Length: 338
Image 1 (cartoon, rainbow, N blue to C red):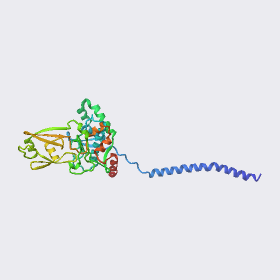
Image 2: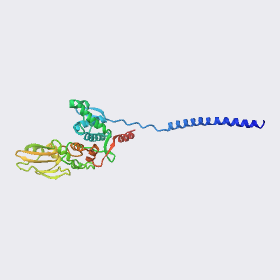
Image 3: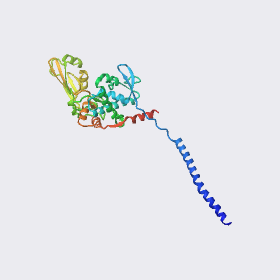
Image 4: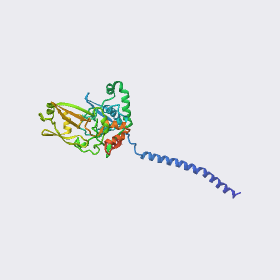
């Protein structure tokens, strides 16, 4: 019997340890896990603050006051004024990208001098024409509901999208109607811009008032241009054309003018013009409407009618550009200013 007692004690001890050790291991594991979690929690980086949709501070020309609007609401008000609501949805989307890109450029600039202090942009043709919802209700009357809904949906479908070149927002210029071609930027303005190059735009020929006629008395013509043509039948001689088949330079009497100078001084619809003297008047015929650089709005609508989407449209009129998210640029600026 004496030899059995040590065996019983050893067996009892072994059984006891069998139950106690796993319990201790579990407790230790829980404590260790809690400690590790606490350490991770304490060392984890702070969550980055989400960049909210920016507001656009608009200088209202009529009231001479500054009003702020959420970005997408502002873009809706611009598209509503800059493109007819009965245009194709894909054309309206393309216009939304151009309008949003234009204003994002202003939002990212901190030293813009062309607007009153405290404003980002004006609501006139100096920048982009804009009207708020109430103003559009008054303007459109009974057509407000369908027009605003259509334009707002086009804007929301492209929410946050802008046009970039080398990771920067482009100068998204646009105009009403081409003469069949758009213009190289440097042939109307001074600077060469790589993404603003002349392209064909044959859809514009179907636009209303694609061709227009204006008559100017000879005396008024002479006064506006500071020239004297007397009784000469020939008004002037076009000496060069642009890549977009518009007037680059013209000689009248002993003076040489650019096509842009003639357009602005005589208030013509475009720089594609020809003229003829008829007695005491000069009859001027123009093709297209606008400066001709960037996206043609009637061309965009024609492309949409032909089955092209807004991405096709913007990539046709703006060379080598990308469709990017505006938030990426705002994130960078937010991080820089934080």
